[in-house]
Length: 227
Image 1: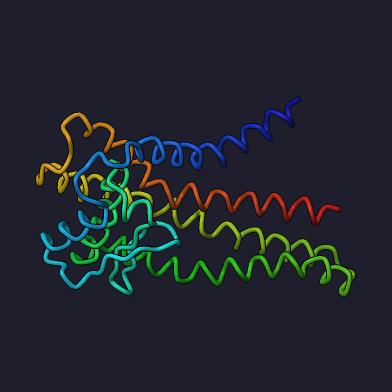
Image 2: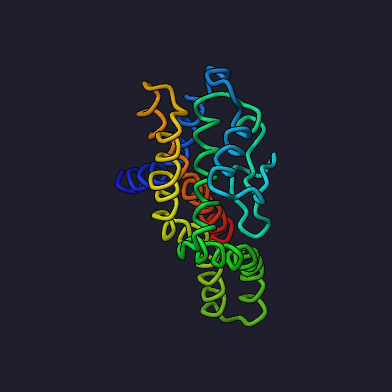
């Protein structure tokens, strides 16, 4: 019974944030014509207002994000072309990151560097987990295999740690950048402001919720290697 409670608690911790983020963003995606302009159009207006004419606004299938290397705000099709509260609020959040970049915001620089490191590290972690059983067989030393296994688990969890550490940067983009712009420009329908705050909070947690899902990979590897 205690084991079952533990499993349920872990599932809630991992799946809960992901469900909440998805539910919040989806909830306010309708009606999809609530505002006169699209997310892409608002992003362009806000970037120009912030003297960031060189920053591009592009459509992507890789999730809403700001690319500090290419200097581009990228929005998924439903945000790029959408006129919902979610579309314009998420667009403002990503512009918030562009303004952080303009201002030399140190946490953004740190996160950019850490993410560049994390991608190859996670691939390395998966590779280590794959070869751990063979190392154990070849060396006939269970301790060596266990060390490889532990190293693989640690590297797979790198993204989760990075996004948890940099969550304050995401909240800063939402509430110190995006919300003031939306308020100052009177872009929101008055009764939408509390809902926009919920969306901005969810937008800040997007990367954390996504990276938590990588922990399921760790559980999957654990189940495979225990066989």
